[in-house]
Length: 171
Image (cartoon, rainbow, N blue to C red):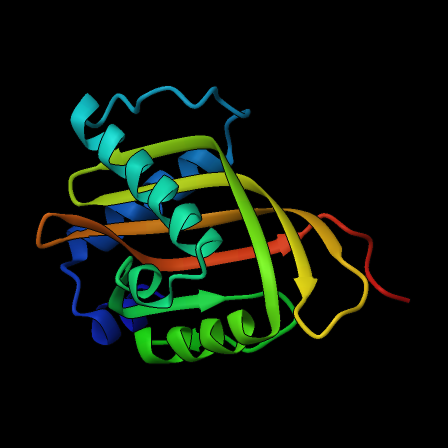
């Protein structure tokens, strides 16, 4: 997998190895409070938290232009029960379709955050309320996510994200 990541995203081995090490260490530890990572300055942690809050703000305003600017050009979004969306253009098209069909409110709660150099790993939970614009029943969803951000030209951009609902699978 590391070889695939290296060739696809042209990351230095140290960056990929570091992210994989942080992921493996984070996965083996109990949930920590969302305090600042010991690997990063308070300013970097605050900047990542601000990027997460900016995502909710842009999403809740259905501001497609502002929202997609929070993603890197080579971002990959991995929604549940659907194929991965690869690249900012695919992510933008998906959000365009979503915002055309729904009014939505999204709230992110960061559960833990690790920041190391130009990478940040956010583990969080979300609340999503969706109302179809054409009418119909509103949906409330609770779920969790992992968002990995990369610092690009001074901004913390989503590089990879994956999320899923806490709801029981459909039978």
